[in-house]
Image (cartoon, rainbow, N blue to C red; front, side, top):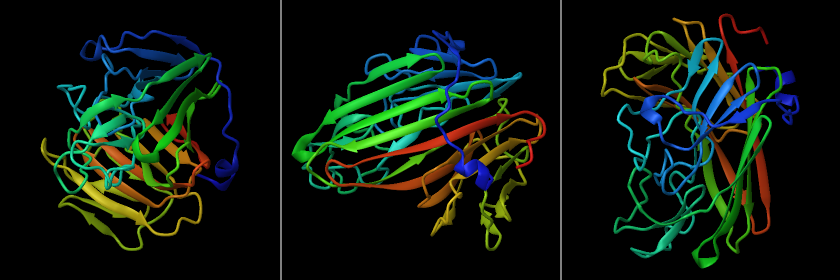
Length: 334
């Protein structure tokens, strides 16, 4: 993640073919698109309130990536073998979430009244005092999506007018880079309401490579180092720039740690997940400064999670971009 790469422009046009992609039997029947630029093939689920692959109330419904194929290697896979479209975390690949802890309008809503979840729609508050991202809130109204696509790209846009002055316009674009095993995810949020938006946003980055269970066959690398070695559970740790796991994870075991929380001088919004067994790797690099980086893992996914802060007065907007690169064998020197 060099300085030269950090300053490089992100508006790159990919020449690719967009067609319907049938997908594996386990995911058959869900609407999706297939992007192919001659280097990588990307299968993307489409948001659909009645038939979509993901209809939960936690993650942004747009641009959920089923898989990326590159030179015989598969990147990403469903987190759960038994898929539930309404499950809060039944997703795959780079999955984004707004306001994990503080959705717009939740605190002021009475039980049964609606609040706003960006990328989802209007949800009904229950009787609990605190918001919980894993709770199955009742979907009052799904936000409508406009989907456009062309050679090598797809764009999702959602406009939503909520209660008590909350309103936004959200857009996500995924664009393949011509002739390279890369894509750029661009996100845009505009405050169209009367209320000030002050929320977190993060990408969960559910990553599995070549269907290899996460464990000793992986490393997760960051552009920043641990000041001191950090233990993560009994058999894992963050040391220097990498998270290393010494023992396989059990079926019910998970790892969690905050690996960065402080001032980002620039360039910290990046990570690489590498499968040591097959030699394949994926890295991402974002242009928004971190608020924190969290690491979470289970047997089916290693997840470096970059959190950013979004503050928008009425009428203001913001755009941020993340570039994903896929590798086989040795990763080129930076």
